[in-house]
Image 1 (cartoon, helix red, strand yellow):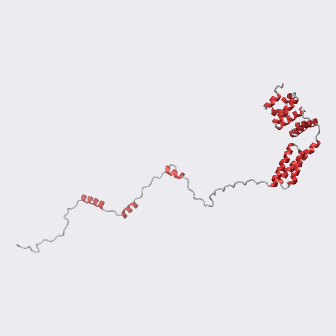
Image 2: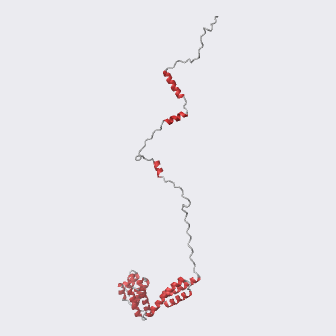
Image 3: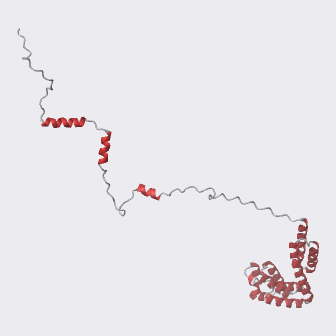
Length: 268
């Protein structure tokens, strides 16, 4: 066999891809595929986000803008105020102390009160001479009890004045009755009652005096005692019934059934 010479040998070629030439269409498809497969870095994502501005929201005029129920509830909800300092906080009211028990009177005060009650009892009964003596003894013995002795001096002055009046009063029943009628017409019903009572002590069976006393007691509002005096007067002098039916001094007695029985009921 004949060996070829080195000059006849073909030159060595580098290894090349045995790929066929690619058309423009194929190039575009391949580039799209590579773009999809190519990973995107984080920095490139941030850059893309920064470049694209966010979409603007449509602004609504203040007059036509409506608040949602949630925002209205939030706006109406009262805001919680900060807690006040301890100096400004209200303190609970202190409990009211119980009233102190009344002071018990001393022995001297109790004795003075007892003596005053006794003298006042005689004064109310019209025993002015006895009342004067008791009030004088009270003032002398219990001078340290100022409140009681002050009242005792007042009643003592009244009792002495009544005793001086008694010394100038008439002594007979008719004069006392006339004085009682004068006081009754003047509206001095207490003085009139006293005059009629004095007259009855001197003449107990005088019908006109009993009638005057009934009229005076009716003016004072003492209905029971007035009816008692009127019944006594009508028993002694029945013809006074006609006068009693129209007497203005007895007006307060007219609604009482006892008055109807005494004045209008027929008598046997």
